[in-house]
Amino acid sequence: MKRIKCKIAYDGTFFNGFQVQPKGRTIQGEIEKGIQKLHKGTHVKIYASGRTDTFVHAKGQIFHFDTPLLIPLERWHDALQTVLPSDIAVLEVSEAVKDFHARFDVISKEYRYFVQRGRRMDVFRRHYRYFYPYQLSVDNMVQAANQILGTHDYTSFCSAKTDKEDKVRTIYSIEIIEKEDELEFRFVGDGFLRNMVRILVGTILEVGRGRRNPEDLILVLNSRDREQAGHTAPGHGLFLWQVNYNN
Image 1 (cartoon, rainbow, N blue to C red):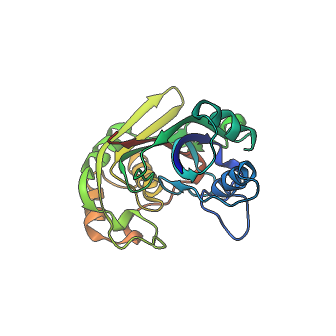
Image 2 (cartoon, one colour; image 1 turned 120 degrees about the horizontal axis):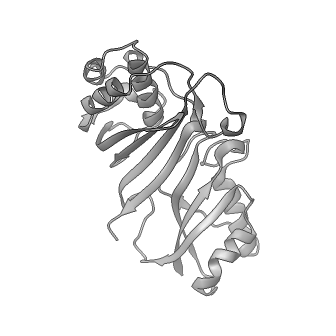
C-alpha cells in the first residue's frame, strides 16, 4: 500500500465547498469519484489539509490517499487528471512516507484575498475578486492588521458554526498590497478557523472605509464576540494559496 500526496488547484465557482455534502457538487466528491474509477469501483477516501467553503478557490491544496495500485509515480499525474473535471488541476504528485498526514502535519498555511476597487465592476473578474467600490485608507488598514498579529483566541473572527473548541491560532503575517485597481491581502498562520480570513478582511475593509478605527481591532479581538467584528467578505475573493510542511 502506497501513500500518494497530491497538490491541486481548483476554481471554486461551481462547487459547494471542498467537503462531501449530501447534495451538491464538491471538490472532495469529484476527486473521490475520479479515484474510484482508477480503482475499478472501489471507494478510496482522500484526506485534505483542510476544507474550503462554497466559491472559495485554491492554488495549492494538498491531499493524500492510500492505494494498492502499482501505477508508476510519473504516471499518476496524468492518470488523475484524466478522471477529474476541468475546474480541478493536478499540479504535483509524490509518494509520501506512510505516516504523513495532509491535515495533521501542516505547520502553516497562506491564504490570499483579492478585492477589486474602482467605480465599475469588471465582469471578467467577478468570480475571483470582491468588488468594493469605496474609498479606502490602506495605511489605516495596515495599522489595524498589525493589531491582531501573534497568538490569540480568535473567537471574534470566526463563524459561530465552527466545530473547533480551541480557537487559539497564530497569525505570523498579514500583508496588504496595492496593485492598480486591486488590493491583495496575504495571511500566513499556523491555521485558520471557519470563515476567519473572510471576517478579518471584512473588518479591515471597514477600517479602511472609516467605519472603525485601527485600534478597534484589538478591542474586538479581546471581546471574543463574533457580533463585534465586521461583515464576512464573500467566498469568491479567497484563495488557499499554499500549505507548508516540515519536509
